[in-house]
Image (cartoon, rainbow, N blue to C red; front, side):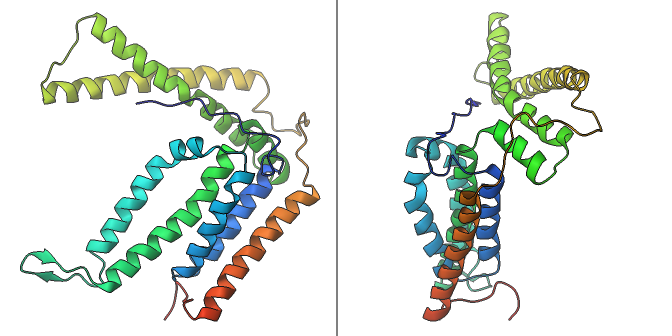
Length: 266
């Protein structure tokens, strides 16, 4: 178990200068554009454009791969499931062997492209956004309750401490001679016990943090002052409009080619 401290985004990058709410809205535009279609061409075009835009986000490729390896593993599992089980809407079994048809391959490719095209912008946006700016923008632009926004921010900041607690408890148990050895049952019991200890430490820390935040006025019901304004500038609106134009362009190309099909209905 290893949780790394989030890397500071590049504030001078084109995407780093944009309002966090504008970036989230752009991600939602992409999501809507891909939810309504079930063809492989539209998400393929959008995924290609997203990959071309990565150099302008200020996110290093190494950072992107480190943050998205679990996503790639999950997408691979979903694609494999579609490839083996989903064969044009039916499961073919011949002498105990699954028959992989063209329908299954098309379904796997479509689902893979859609998942990658939907989730990649979210990963890039989170990597290119300062968490404090995100919380401020949610409160000021979308009027999210400050108690929820800053509480989530505090929880995000405490995530790396879970890794430190895990390692500290493991070292303390080894120092006391509590080693399960090579026994699988012993290792499972040790893992469950150590997980419970980490959860207890996290709950205690969370209670102390909640008390401290309440004492500092984060639970106030009145109007809060703004220390870090997050205005919507012309570049932010241009990002949203440009994303919508790209989604419409990809959909239009798919319709012109004849591959577009709605995700719902006949």
